Length: 47
Image (cartoon, rainbow, N blue to C red; front, side, top):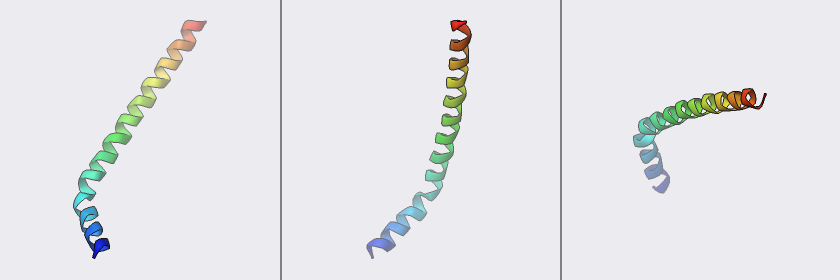
C-alpha cells in the first residue's frame, strides 16, 4: 500500500515536477550562457 501511495503522489506531482525540471534546465542554460560570456570577457580583459 505504501508503494501505491508513493505512485499516487508521483502521478499527482508529475506535472509540477516536470515544470520545475524545465525551469531548472532553462535557468541552467541561462547560467551556462552567462558564465561563458563572463569567462570570455575575462579572457578578453586579460589580453
